[in-house]
Length: 286
Ligand code: 3HC
Image (cartoon, rainbow, N blue to C red):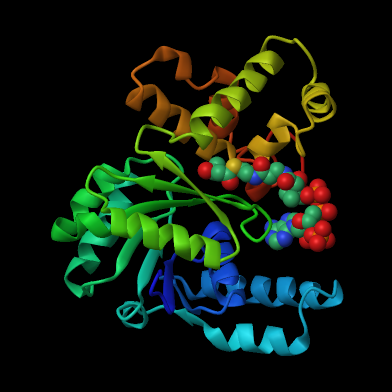
């Protein structure tokens, strides 16, 4: 149904690495491409660590792990991606960078290849303009962090996405062990249009002294059964990413109610980006 044997992922960070892991675990030949060999090394060692942990927990055998590892290639040259049946881009959330990546590759694409972006909020219709005639094969595949754990793939159709591309992408997501849920191409799609204003509001509640950060999180965890409070989740996502998504919502939905909270923006200016910088709302340095 999906007709996919080989999956290529552009970007070996947290999201790209996670997508590569589940693709390989579920039997797909997988190549992770990144310009940085250091980033590829980090991605490979995280894969090895998580696969070993899966053995310890009895979810995989040593044989499963070595088969998974044999399906994974870490490449710093783009050639390794050209014959993939799908290319999933998972680089930094920047429209121009993403468009450049796709337009640079445009003449290498094969006829049936699906071109997907793991963007969290950037317009799929806009990104698809970078691939010319291949826009009908362009689609959003929005995975959630941590990718090996979270069940959802939000599948976003751009204006030109063909029905066949959507069907193949949904079938592929299911073959990767996920539940695919469709959404249309409006700013933030569904997930971040609903999630980010809640996170932003938690920053306002903190800024206005309604409660301490720990208490805001505790209230949402215990009262609403969220696995993480909104402020810890913001740290986990990255405060810079949260600001970026709020800006996409404010501009795309043309409404001031999506403006990023000044305190959230101030933390980003101060370099407090969350888990990745060791300090965000909470301090992770110890
Ligand atoms: N990679 C792989 N597995 C991981 C992992 C990672 N990075 N982090 C945790 N896990 C696994 C653990 O191994 C463990 O597996 P096990 O139960 O089989 O042992 C399981 O997840 C639970 O982990 P822990 O016991 O260490 O910790 P928690 O029970 O606190 O769970 C959590 C951690 C899964 C991260 C949980 O807190 C959670 O679900 N948080 C919410 C995450 C969330 O909302 N993600 C979406 C973010 S929004 C997004 O990504 C979209 C973007 O556009 C912004």
